[in-house]
Amino acid sequence: MFYGPNVLFAFIGAAGVLIIVLSLMAIPHYKLTPTDDESWRARIQRKLDQADLQITAWEYVKTSLLLGVLLGAGAYVLSGAVAGAPLGLLVGFFGYYTFLEERRDKRRREYQEALLDVVNILQEAFSASNSLGMALATVAEHAPDVVRADFVEITTQVSLGASLEETLTRVAERRRDMIFDRLVEALVANQRSGGQQLGPVLVALRESVMGLAAGRRRIATAQSRIRWEARIVCSAPFVFLIMLRQTAPDLQEPFLASFYGQIAVVLVGVMSAAAYYLMNRIGAKAVAPLESAGVSA
Image (cartoon, rainbow, N blue to C red; front, side):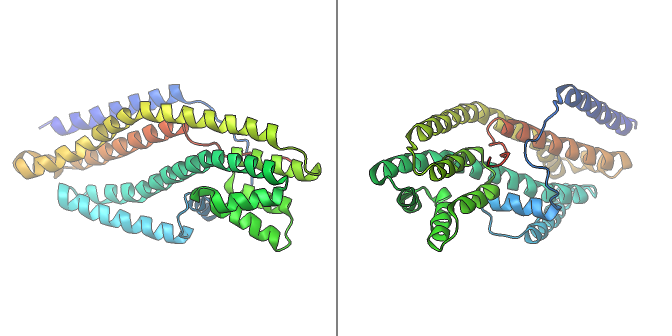
């Protein structure tokens, strides 16, 4: 009759241990990006744009709520626990946010690695024509898809009479990519100096991108097995709960019907979801491109 409080106290103790471990591992982080006062909608919209998701921030919020409601209803039906409904709602809502961050980081890595092709095309085209405008037009035609739209925008705006420097800076502010910023600075410096050779700068930039890409691939390969193990461990409590409901309902239902059972379901769900999110974000930090500090004048 006392198994309910004992299980609850065990979860509280585990949560305490988790908090202590996270406190010991906490490292202060400092942002080099300008401290602009963005609204929550502007921040969400910037992440959506970086992830190349063609939706607005409000559409994202509505989709998150819908997913949360569906997951909450499914959790209640499958588990039979009332606490599963609000837990599923939270997991569905914040799970979509996790998906957004993962997709954004993936697209930003692809974008940054595609800049290697951009640098190669620029170097060859500039050497052949000695014209920055023609070199950028060649990039807009032959660059990988993930970066082509930006260079099409740049060449289109310049052909309409816009300033190349202002156009490059505007795209850089939207992308906030460190490698792209360095490329923009090299192109702007080339224009200001009257068309000096870009070769040495582009060679150094290419080596930087190649080093970043190789390092990320090694880290991603090392993390792949760990990520799958974490997914299995974090989802195991929910799988066991559903299996017990189907195979041994008389053993499960008395506990889940109690107050302590509902609290245990919430604690297990929150701790599992938090553990997976933290694992995912800590692992992603090793391979995610940092937000840029902007283009220097």
